[in-house]
Image 1 (cartoon, each protein chain N blue to C red):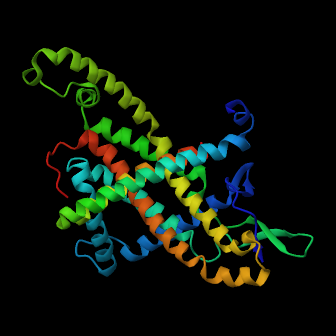
Image 2 (spheres, chains in turn orange, blue):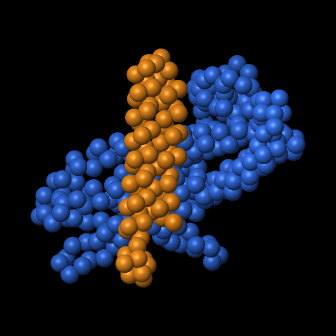
Image 3 (cartoon, rainbow over the protein chains, first blue to last red):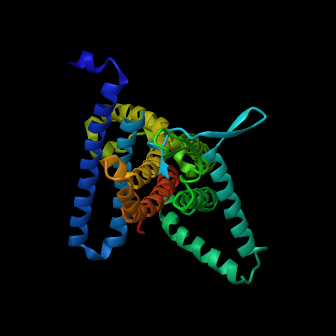
Amino acid sequence: MIEILAQSPDLYKPIQAGLGCIGAAIGVGLVGMKGAEAVGRNPDASTQILVQSIIGMALAEAVAFYALFL
Amino acid sequence: MNASEGVHQSAEKIGEILGFPITNSMVTSWVVSLVLILIIRLTVGKAKLIPGKGQLVIESVIDSIRSIIEPIVGKRVFFASFWLLSGLFFFILINNLSGLLPGVGTIGTGYYDDDGHFHLNHYFIRPGNADLNMTLALALVANAVWAYIVLRHEKLGHIAHHVFGPKATKKDVGPFFIPLAILFLAVGLIEVVSIMFRPVSLTFRLFGNVFGGESLLHSMFELGNILGLHETVTKVMACFVPVPFYFMEVLIGFVQALVFMLLVAVYIGLFTNHEEGKDH
């Protein structure tokens, strides 16, 4: 089956993109989960946790773009 | 008037200067740069020691950026790197936000198909960062300046120690020192590969977000046609369906500009920040 898929880009590009986006979505969700939990434990650190979460989410989401466009 | 079927991944050429192609994203980014330069020049004018009103506004903006960047980069290279970071942030931010103004992606030339419907497939205006060349240029410039700042402000021995050097002392680990030192050397090689990959990651993160947003907005305007609904239903839906996506695009434009700046700051700060206990 892999040989059939490797024949033309129209067949393997969507699968590549889909798998990449699954990983990225799970990663971003994990960052958000841990961020919300951290704010719950220490509400005063909310701004710092926000900055860290944004950086983490952007780094995790970038992998989806490698899979989509490269 | 229907827009075309999807946004083309590469920007379209709309002219030539001496054989060098000019794309629509290029023209948009020139206009945005011109507007930015004019705004700063007109509000600040000539910088005085006792600031006027415009200069006060700009100075307060710079102060807020300073409070974000200085803990990351460290005091020594703050002035050497500030121009790069704030320039990157405002340039990317204004480019992203200007991609949401009316007229972007809707003004252009097209063709009439058999039913008499008009299809637009040649746009005149496109967001500046929706072009891979633009984000590649930004990433390469940011990395070149990173290399210059790090090499200028750090001794080569320090840099080698950061990347390859053993982080444990002989006292802490005793007999394991030699294997650990070899391990740190191998990790340093992986680190070098990761450093080589940074321009690629910066490029694709920004391009993917902005191009994806542009493509999404085009699809949202065409949602009725894609679902196969009637022509007038499409036009009614196009009045209120894209609105939440415009909000999302504003947020993403701001976040991507912030992330680009913060990542370059972190890359610089990894080598030059010598103050332990960084509190924001």
